[in-house]
Length: 79
Image (cartoon, rainbow, N blue to C red):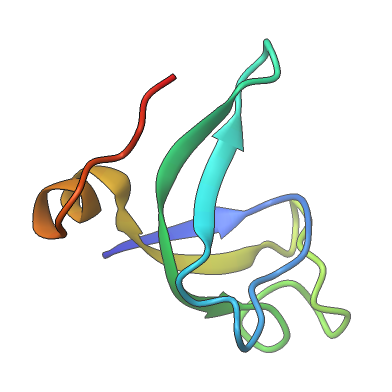
């Protein structure tokens, strides 16, 4: 498991588990980082509005994409 700070966008909420975790590089390509397990805002970061920011980030808990790729059947598609 990886615990990361999210400094932009919305915090993870109930029902988001299993969703993709990704970053966008400078050319606009999305890069797979993992599979979401949990996280959130209010109280643990992200303020009461559940929106992350540099000074009040959200926290993401996710399985690294490399671990997921080796632990589950199938492969991550690389384009």
